[in-house]
Length: 205
Image 1 (cartoon, rainbow, N blue to C red):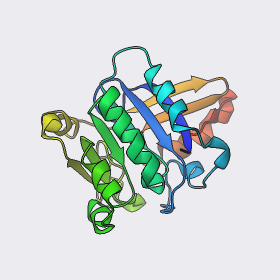
Image 2: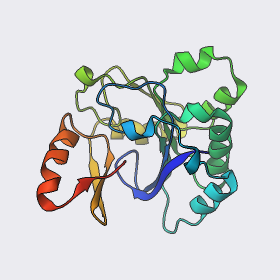
Image 3: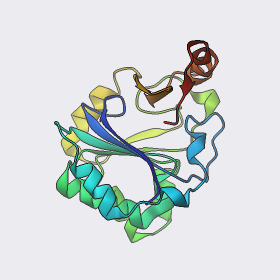
Image 4: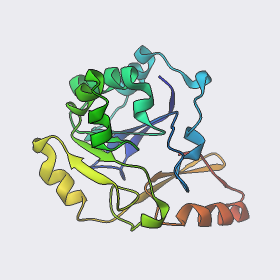
């Protein structure tokens, strides 16, 4: 599976301390996407599923859930299904999944793998990012997107998150700055302008 990054603890996309997974490859090419570097597939980052599972199981500390974003996770449907099953069975059943496809579009695919994936996630954020509809809502990039709570066990958890505000988690890695979360409108552009003054550059996220 083509993976850009696995990060822990992610504290901005979902409840608590989570494992964040960013997949590679996306057909949507949304204007002002926060992760355009993840659009193009990269065979050199294609990892065996067994290796991904080893990395996930090696995480030490409390894991409150797992967030899968990209890229477009449904570009790799078979692998995504296997990943979701492993997470659900071995790590957490609080899985938050992001996709540029709407829930209706995915259902119309009439694909049992897609249906199985959706049956194992707690919440699903759907729809393409639309820059002019960026209203700084929590958990989603633009107002056209919908947060679907699919596991009733976690309804109150996600409803409480939706009453909050956006958060961005900044991590320094050597001379790069990684920003995890959904940035406020124009935040990344401002950072890219200012960081070189401090000898830093914006890293991929």
